[in-house]
Image 1 (cartoon, rainbow, N blue to C red):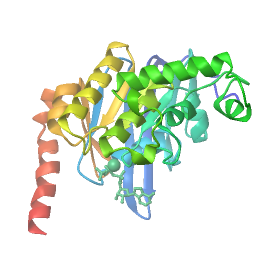
Image 2 (image 1 turned 90 degrees about the vertical axis):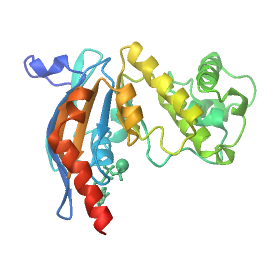
Image 3 (image 1 turned 135 degrees about the horizontal axis):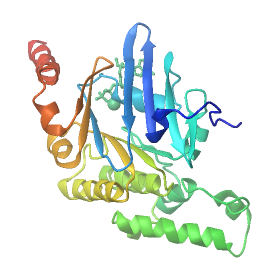
Image 4 (image 1 turned 180 degrees about the horizontal axis):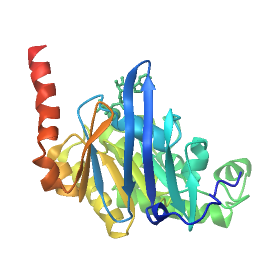
Length: 275
Ligand SMILES: Nc1ncnc2c1ncn2[C@@H]1O[C@H](COP(=O)(O)OP(=O)(O)OP(=O)(O)O)[C@@H](O)[C@H]1O
Ligand SMILES: [Mg+2]
């Protein structure tokens, strides 16, 4: 299906991603309410908000895991603009959006290297599956992909675990492999759902360095994060959600002093303390 928009030029297409009026409810719970924002290449953006404020839901809407009740998502890819809201998740992934998950999703019973190869785009007839079906020599595309996957594992400090089953990795190691798998797609936009949650400081540094590197390569990174040191240290922009509504969007120093943001966090803490 050709999803390119045939309409006349639209000023919004200058953004990599344009989200307009995106809404989604679950049985009366408003998880996204009229969300509108743009994402530009080379601007690392933190998506923050209290638990249940709709951060993961937004990622699910952007990646086609969920369909919005209303609103639009325009993505620029190879000089064309695509409306994502009616596309299946695999098509969206092929348009240059990579994602990692709050609850890490690796295939536990295959090797770390194969987890990466499954995430690597292939030329026709040159893929992981055809590689599996061929006994004998690996084809050149397969070798290229393996070399690339190994280089990415090396980048995240996991090259020595390439042959290990994913199920045998620690939590932090799984996060690193999931990140490497996202990098293997060469996407333009990276949606990272709590990439440093539950990892040791050394692993957090590796992850932060990779986000900085993506930024330097003029990629767009939207990352969900609860650790405010990471948020303030990494982001050029912060978007804040509360009850599915965008309550702030701006430079870190502006957002940190925003009364609505302070209230959203402190309000929840008061509720928690009372409960
Ligand atoms: N598939 C679903 N079905 C029903 N309700 C859902 C679903 N996904 C999310 N919700 C609800 O939508 C709201 C937003 O959830 P979401 O997971 O997006 O929050 P979050 O900001 O990612 O929270 P956290 O920081 O805890 O990860 C919550 O009330 C949640 O219970
Ligand atoms: Mg979440």
